[in-house]
Length: 365
Image 1 (cartoon, rainbow, N blue to C red):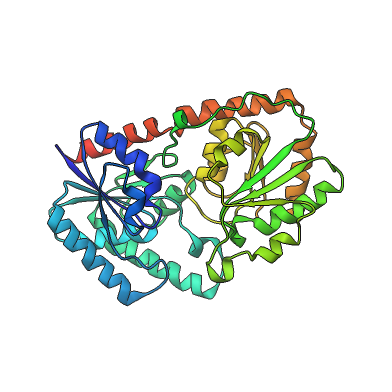
Image 2 (cartoon, rainbow, N blue to C red):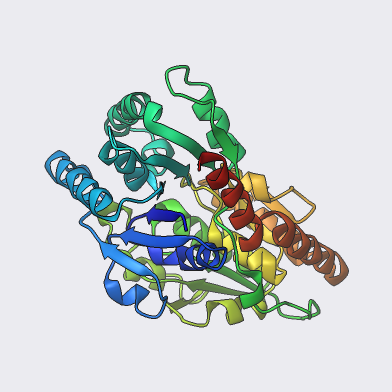
């Protein structure tokens, strides 16, 4: 039985269904993440916690690399698969000169590629230097959107001979409700995310206010936890200033059920993600999608066919597309929803992603 170590960060529990599917296929799985063990208590997966600092911290980063190296030596996996920016890079560094096959998934390129600043420019230089030095240890690289794959392959110093495109992280469509009713006089428009500026919270709030002046009976819902990420966090008082236009529901455990009762999913992000999970889940349920022309989002949405694309950081254009949605017939909304259901089940489902990854694992051992 081949042993695969999956390394991620503070949200590794989102990959529990992926790891459980691998276990069902006959692989021995070791999950290594930085979140609390409670998230894995009911998973029947062997979980090891390690220390990971999300921000720039060279001393802590070196400690993390050596901690991962000790874990690898103790567990002795056949394959290590790293997810997320830091865990994917540090998995390669930790495995240097060890007889282990190591690969990575580039699920978005994060904040340093999303925002223009001197600090991010310097961080991008460091990022590409690390990719150049460590890429020779990589046995495979998986990209979740075509834009990131093309960007890496345009850098001649980064080894690109073993690249693969696998769209998204895999959605368990069997665990989702399915929208059937597209006929409603009052349309419900939802936004699901952590309350972060670069997710487009302010653009959503401003656009909703514009639309409510013309469509009084439309309903807007903002769903997700408040964030503690410093300057990127949207404070509660800013959200409450729009309480006449948008109802803030906070963090919820019934998000999928709320999606099923809604009519449009909006994600006006300016953040460089792989393929946003919330769009995949909403599309699999059967919602039309309204999002930005950003990597990952534009891979999923065919403008005018299964949703709409707008420019990031543009609340007026977002409002125009919302108005276009409100003037779309129920039959056309149903067609968009059916396209999304079919698309995600065929190209973004958990089964599809697992099968594609197993093909790569088998090629290594």
